Length: 192
Image (cartoon, rainbow, N blue to C red; front, side):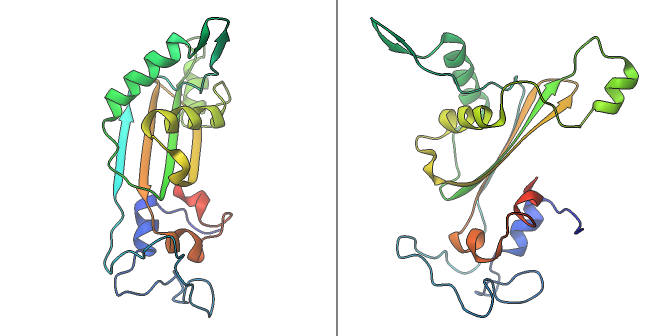
């Protein structure tokens, strides 16, 4: 099994420094043939570095709410609207442009009834309580982005911790970066 690497190190390996795309072992991305850029996207200039935005938001993770429909109209629940407004303020303005990768880590507070031993064993391990990762990711993308179609990959994770917080990492990527040599099993999992 390969050693896990950080998202920054991973993107540095796939960022062109000499105008050519190379994988870690030196082969051209995509095998022997060079990939042509999509006609819809203009290739990034040589030496392009991805824009990143990282924030640790001290608030509990919340899931995407469904709109409520009544005979008087449709509305979103007040709690969801309040959480959305707070997240917008704490995260700040979005500075990354599409296409982008979104990595979200939701730290769930451990129950106060757990013993010190159990708390020590569970700290940093996967957490199962709600919200589901798809609802968590949906709420964050709805709040932070006007159009979330620019997200080409997402890595949501829920873990146990002492305090509730969300760690949100957005990274701008080049189309060739994502599709030129990545395989889901080997590389996308390393974005954590």
